[in-house]
Figure 1 (cartoon, rainbow, N blue to C red):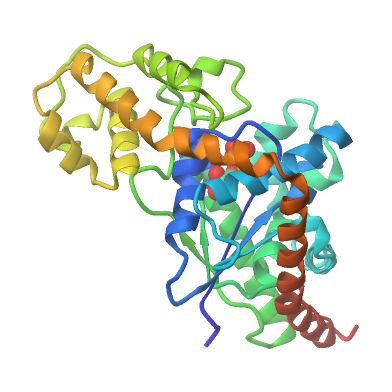
Figure 2 (figure 1 turned 30 degrees about the horizontal axis):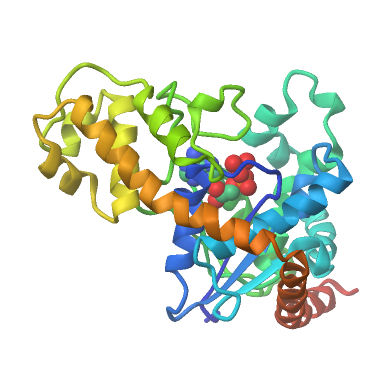
Length: 332
Ligand code: ADP
Ligand code: NA
């Protein structure tokens, strides 16, 4: 048996969205205080798989930490740190580069999306990204990882690496980490296109709600969100072929800790003229204290650095014996 341990991370690539909040940050906070230890990471080594301006990256690492804490991740209850400050991640990633197969990496849809047409010119790190992600998780022998649906394929690859390592070396050293993909907001979609996920990399700012948007911007984006003209049905079943409507109901459900069915019990028969203002009010009510707290944390960068430094020490204390044992198993 492995000690119950939860790990997850977010890239400090700027522009966190409502998707990141509902799919990740809010759930990270909710998982604290349970029977599993919670370890949360700003994954700067992942961010540099595409070009980052050094001075901006440094700022965004602190912003990432501020977003975690403003969303309720408490550095006294969780280990909160920055990936590059704990060298065990990069070292285990190298070991996993020798376990994972090249073909596994080429199959990752995120690599295909991010590398684009000219994939020969992508960084080698962008291709190897999932081996580093496996190392992030398995260097803590984490048993569960809360993520959005977009990370499911990477999680499967983490399990493939763990299984191949355990098999090749004849040990039960790494757990088969479970993805925790739960709730109504595992895939928050674009406000402009119900077939695309809400993402900071979408060229249209109207497609997403940023954690830094003010109340007016949030209300306006929700008012202009694409929908259909039909009234809302009495249950989620009735939204099957209405992706835009389903997305807004899912967002309402996740923000208010209800199921989509509960939300629809209240709005059955009403149109978006009634639903959208209620959603906007709820979104502003939830996000404005987070935006405010982020600003408060960002006003004291030295304090953020101190918290991340302490987190790194605590993370290292968990990771080092696991990394040492891994090397020993491999004959290193
Ligand atoms: P992004 O996907 O925005 O580039 P990350 O890769 O750092 O950011 O993802 C951080 C976390 O946020 C991951 O757990 C990811 O699954 C989650 N996430 C990102 N976008 C969404 C979305 N639209 N809906 C739900 N979860 C999301
Ligand atoms: Na992602």
